[in-house]
Image 1: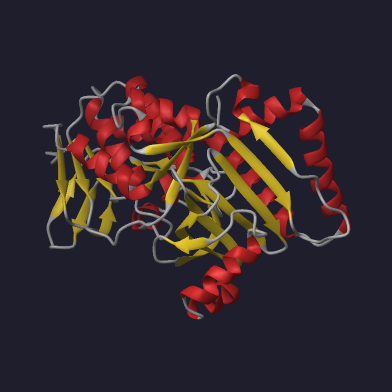
Image 2 (image 1 turned 180 degrees about the horizontal axis):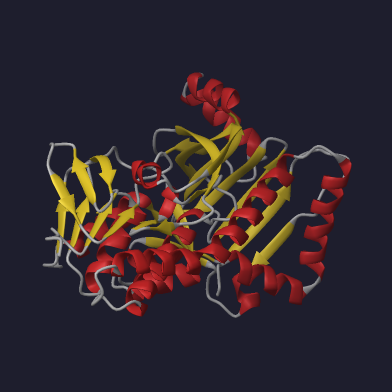
Length: 383
């Protein structure tokens, strides 16, 4: 029998990789987490109720109020100026009998929390090393060393080396749009309401970050965002004031602005032959509908379920786990990916039929409480 270095190797140091390494270690397996240092992640993640419940049950966080901010309402404003416009719509978590739809977390704070938890697990080793190759059950490290395990978890992002080396197919569509993110201080706070202004090239969204602060996610053509940022802070703030329709008074920058390219990435199968993919190695979307990390945490939950379902007495248990995991994830990945992709494209569509469908859909959600509750459940990832 092969002399393995660990039960599971987890490749990738982002939030999905950290969550996977901790969750697998808590299941009693010996884990080596390969997590090379990376620049700070300045983005935020709006995690819906089921995702927050998973984080708490998995021991990844304590009280969400300690590091996050509740999302109690979602306000959508059609600012497209198109011939057929959707009504302004306000969704309240109270309608669903919930104190909040979810919580908004700074990714840096979440990662710090995960690292603190990882330090308490004696069967979890974290190494500041990347991977340069994968062959079968063996990875080659950036320092030239090698490690092997029956199961390899690829959490190494959109350009996943693990995915490519394992021969797992992927599809990616890149958009001309990008996302600008930063933190803002508002003269008139938004409370617990996420406010989305829908413009022809994408939404301009303000997400509650506590007190007078909001996290901005502005989607537009890459050239537009680069030009806005290059104009300097005063010009950028003037654009923010215009895009927010002057609803929140004076706006000031609370952090630098960063611009990220956008694409849709999907895989037909998220696991095979002892390799599984989690997070953006398996799926990536524009930041629409708050699905990115929520879906990644559902990956981790299903990985834990697959590990619990497959006995580790057989020599091929890693391969069996990868097959079981891929079967569990197939429906959710296809469904969520299709919905988010269609939603993003509908926001950009100029054709009248698309405008009519989108406006009609928001009218229906506004006027039909049962339909609205179904939309809540879908958007929150309830299963």
